[in-house]
Image (cartoon, rainbow, N blue to C red; front, side, top):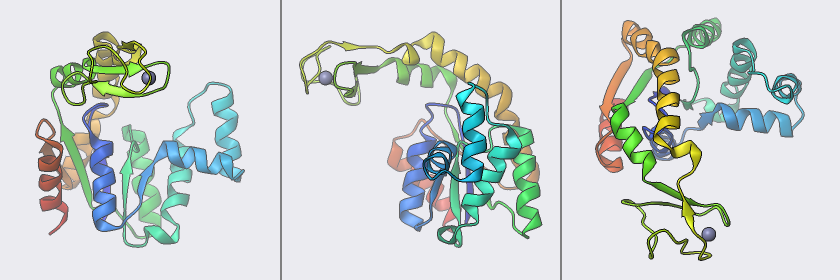
Length: 214
Ligand SMILES: [Zn+2]
């Protein structure tokens, strides 16, 4: 069961990936985690990646793909894995397919957690954060006991720059430009499945479960 999660930033694909991983006992693989683990363990690939990151450069596709393939080759991935945050672009998807095909494998499912931009902007702009203790809230989903005040430490809550509508929309624009072509890429391969990500989290998961559980 080899799964790729697709969906805009803020669509909730990470949450779904974790649930799939838990239910099917397969690793949840995010590139951020792989980078951190390799750098921490001082592997050759990690050292190479760190050189780019230290200079504030993007890690090249080929190196990222090598890191992912190294992770996929580990024993706990024998029954499958959920990829979250990779591939992000068509060249990355092609590198992944080429590397998998060398070892006689291919991806089984690409799950697109589909949420309209306006919905994501609204969702994110409801977030509130405490810059003092790091606690996070949401004005609708997880409101603090007293409006605008952190439950944990009593400091004032703020809307982070990252969650402001104009910042969120910028990220969504990048997503549409780079990642959305992947939807067509996997559609052509016949492995794309879209789920309505505006539903409650457990319903989104039930939809995904019905797709991959067959
Ligand atoms: Zn606080």
